[in-house]
Image (cartoon, rainbow, N blue to C red):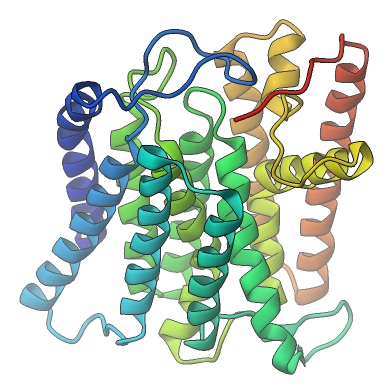
Length: 360
């Protein structure tokens, strides 16, 4: 019941606030730019991330209040979980400032790294590695901190890059949050499930206005916030249970679930290295751009990428019933399978006319 309240409050707050946010953005002329790598036309407000952040925060706080009121002691709230709430809102704030005034890419990157470092030092980190055919995980010591910082910042920016098509980043985030919710319920990590459910409800409220044709975009304030929360979900359960920090089993699950944005981002990085252009230089060769150029509709592209994420989510859920080695093998096969699909899409895109370089 508490979980249902969490998702419901998040959904209601997000969906009710967004019309006002759209009006506010329109009043102050805060529209997303057109042309270049942008595929939309007309003036579309870009502050939808505010609705997601408000919905998530309201749902989470309301749920903790109701839980404490109706069933005191049922769900403990470790104080360091407040760091996650604060860090998420900082990622949201970075994106919001960029949506309004435009921040230099390197400044955003530095702030994100500092916040991610604080999160890792607070205990939310991957500190061990599971290898096939080995019963016990291997501790990775100090390397856990830079690994976790790289993971958090990488996923946050991967969602920022994939947010280029109506309903895409939000829909993928919704599926991932749903899978983690099922995993958390299975292992009895109810506080962690509230974080995931609050995010799912807030995204669903946003998608009412973002499915094609979109009335609002989430902007950097939404994509960075969404990416941060998605990156931190695999770490919550271990910390909540007091069993230590995350391990490579949860990291591999997270990589599988985030395969669409991660693989697309890695491909973009490789493209820019090959072209010898700055890492933050945008282009129009992301997976959704290629599929659009191949003649697919927005809704068909969403169906392909949603089903890819849902299939990988099913693999993660099935793998939980296997032994350590079987789970690692199955998840790895799932990830490699999507890489092959992505490569075929990329090969098809190579036959298309090369677009000229574009700028933000």
